[in-house]
Image 1 (tube, rainbow, N blue to C red):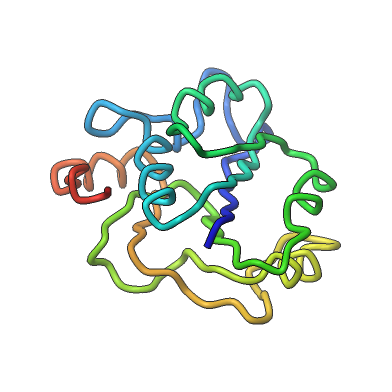
Image 2 (cartoon, rainbow, N blue to C red):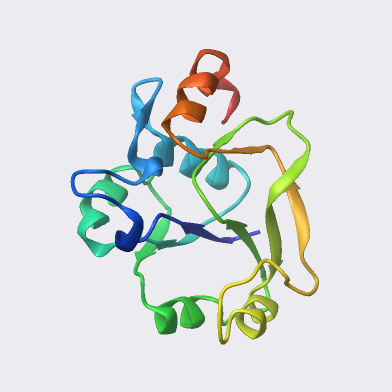
Length: 157
């Protein structure tokens, strides 16, 4: 699987001064840093981050060498990225990689299937999708702080 899409909170739900959860720190690095390491370990080389452009520099600071990324909130940019028959991993929110966790909220589907499903609006009802294991979703800072003591970064690569 060479492609992945990550969704950040849009500006419309971020209060002034509040950062996206994926840019909050855990074990001394942003959550996104750990997400990207796990994705590249799984073979991802191209990433689309649906995020407010004002976070572009912080997002790029989290990327490992060799991971190509596009940061945009534009629907047409997402549709262009998904113009592939290859499988695309989808993480609908910030998450921490836990390799031994079973299938959950993250999923993968062919890019063209995602394009068809998301042509009008985003939905998780995607034909030919399969759940991915190894991810624990973060619903807020409380969840992040609860998971931090048991998160072992050395197990993500």
